[in-house]
Length: 81
Image 1 (tube, rainbow, N blue to C red):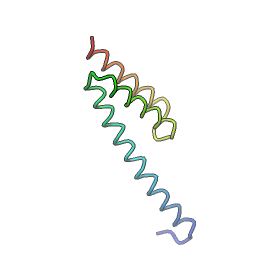
Image 2 (cartoon, rainbow, N blue to C red):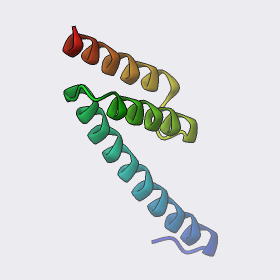
Image 3 (cartoon, rainbow, N blue to C red):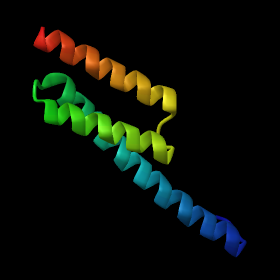
Image 4 (tube, rainbow, N blue to C red):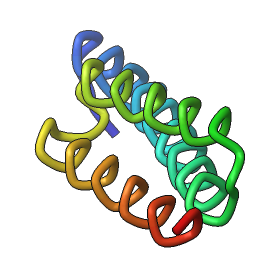
């Protein structure tokens, strides 16, 4: 347990950020699964939008976002073809 007040505050902030990032990653994975399984373009658009937002906020890296979007697009292409 930290002794300094600044260290205690940093611990609180880290816990809050970790919880927020974890929830966002969970939502991201759920949206990706739905987008890959569905033929509905709205779900694909929602997933891609959330991926872009997560990359912008630093939850995932830029190249990871590109990779996820590419895989969703490939899965949708196979479904519709």
